[in-house]
Length: 268
Image (tube, rainbow, N blue to C red; front, side, top):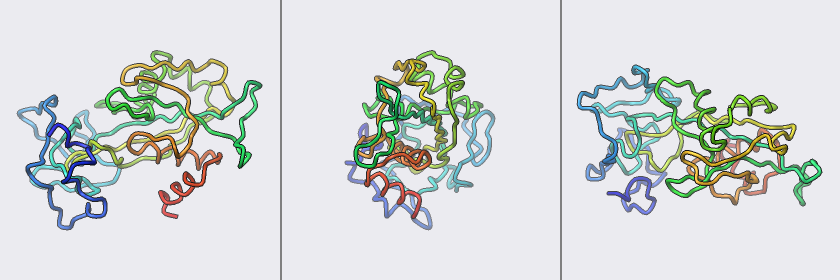
């Protein structure tokens, strides 16, 4: 079953409109999956919906059900039971730092879109080594770690390759949380799923154009670069969703499709 997890070509994949089932029904047992690289402890008795030692097993989505000792994905079935590729049963917490700036020309003036005459937003994107997809430079929250520290550590490790995040923050205009909750990730199963906190760190003054942010790929990133925020630029998992939320907050130019998606995501 090496190709089952997160593989949209899986013939047993549960369609999105069929995921909620009451009462809850597990997916086919023959599709239960646990990656061989992940070894479970022999005396494993987790405390779900609680802080279990150094591990936070609470969900941003509220209390989740536990059946036969296994936590149930609050968003329904995925087509795969077990823990899969994820390190924890139940919620696996991540942090996604979205670092943005305005696109400037050689003179330092904001570049405006030819049609809307509004400024163009750029963000730091990495190319993941594991799947080759472009993404926000985020990562998993370590046991006992504060999300704020994860945001700093992941961006420094993946996009700055040693530059102190404190140095970076000293140049930022402001930061704001844009999302906190469940993530539609290809690694999700019926019993283990991704959740994240996405925070936007924005440079309004243009310091990042003055060589104060020397991007350099590191750790899980194969490449790193500034990218124009555009709906045609494909991103990993739910990262496009996060950028659309940032775009709305920054009130910058978006093409029609991007604006349409943003309204749909907000239920408007």
